[in-house]
Image (tube, rainbow, N blue to C red):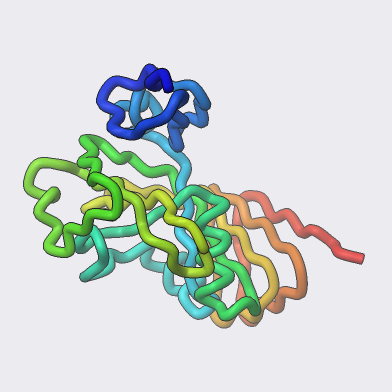
Length: 195
């Protein structure tokens, strides 16, 4: 089988898909992608975290497969994780513009729970084993600082949201049966009615 054209790719495949820019026959791996300084990634979370996140931003996890940091996945994967975190009753996904900076790429399903990559890199990328409603391994990214993250939107489907949702300059997409028990402020609010 001919090898892909991506410099630095260690996978045995014909074409390399860059998860950041979407190129299906990429000459680069995602850690070298031109989009890595302003890529859109998702963070699926619990309904109860929606209001606190809009007040304080995404906070760093103190632990994880790739060490401390703020974790992200591609938007479709973040939706599955968001729904799983809410036991199928709701889906909450923050869409974020993320500056991955200098990226450490882990081989396969390798873990780095101590976060040793933080000494030389701004973020880390790896494959996560099946988890969070996913039946296949999926790509995940972790950044070491909240300063690398800008929330640009919030996607909610079903659920009851306590507290205020304040996202000026962002968008909120609402679908399904959603109840807000607080004030909602945003630049753009899109409500999808379902018959």
